[in-house]
Amino acid sequence: MDCLFCAIATGRIPSAELYQDDRVFAFLDINPLAAGHTLIVPKAHAARLESAAPSDAAALMAAAQRLLPVLAAETGAPDFTLAFNNGPAAGQEVQHLHLHVVPRRTGDGAGPIHHLWKAGPRKPGTEELHDLAIRVQSRLEGRPLPRSL
Figure 1 (cartoon, rainbow, N blue to C red):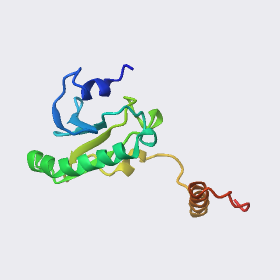
Figure 2: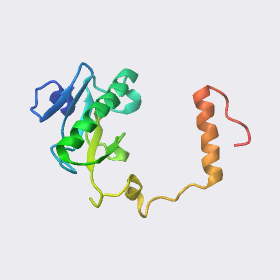
Figure 3: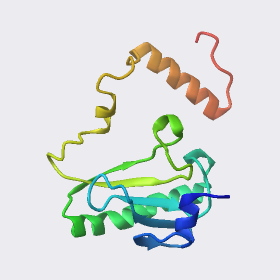
Figure 4: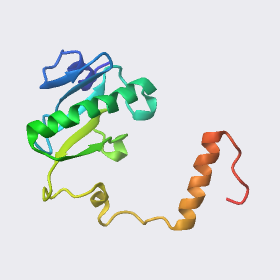
């Protein structure tokens, strides 16, 4: 497999490593949105969050919890945006699961994640959201979908 993040995590490609343990590797993004923009990747290859081992997904979040106060202290950023681009339509450019940890400051101009859709797609109505919630709950619980939907 020729995966950029696998090569970084194994040291075949150099990086500005910040942290690693037996499950994850964290390094500075080479195209940062802000000083300290960090990527956390599982060492085991998984293209998307839903294909990762649950223990690897948990390890990503544990690493973020460990890194956030240190990044805050070192960058002076009081807050962070944490994001997954999960699949090509969501903007995932490297097909290896990775968590973006982006230091944020008041007035940095980026705004909340909702700004990604300033003129975006039609927003669903309350009834549509309710129907979706019922369908998702049914699938998660292994129940047939209600006939009324």
